Length: 260
Image (cartoon, rainbow, N blue to C red; front, side, top):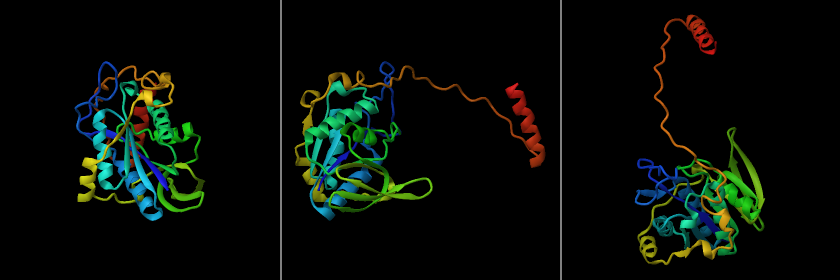
């Protein structure tokens, strides 16, 4: 079984800065971590490899420093790593990111399952995994809490919902996004750390992909951030005291005054 895990290096949530000219996140020189939800995707990919055999390839799109995230994944047990990095990708929204990753996956070649964390903590959109599935015309199972089994051409998984979970079957290949309930990520081994230091990371640029240049980066992003500003401070409110029946009456009168 060939598994591709898409990961993202994100700014540490305590150190997020915005470029005032481009209205995009400043990543260069900022302390970064592997997106926490992607750690569960890495772990699940490794568990599938251990159970069914095959290989795990980790893929990320980002600046050169994103190589650190790939080496961390290798130290955990992934087999290969691919970094797609180019100034042409700067400012990509989720649409352009999904497109670029899908083109990179086509370049990588044969695969059975594509794993992603359910969302990235810097954007919180949960759109890239489904976007990859759409561009590659693949079935998808999102918010997966358990991969029950893989038999022949089918994968069976539990998909988390607000009411519980659904059991879904999908033909392979497919895209799966996972939630944190799916597993407990392992710690890197000494052997894994040594291998991560030595392994050669495969690096691809825009010219290496069979991609439309107008679909990359800011140019290929249909969503635009036109302005960033700090919301004005909230005005002080009121604390209503007394019996519930009296408070309800006071609240109704106050709301009437605001509306009128």
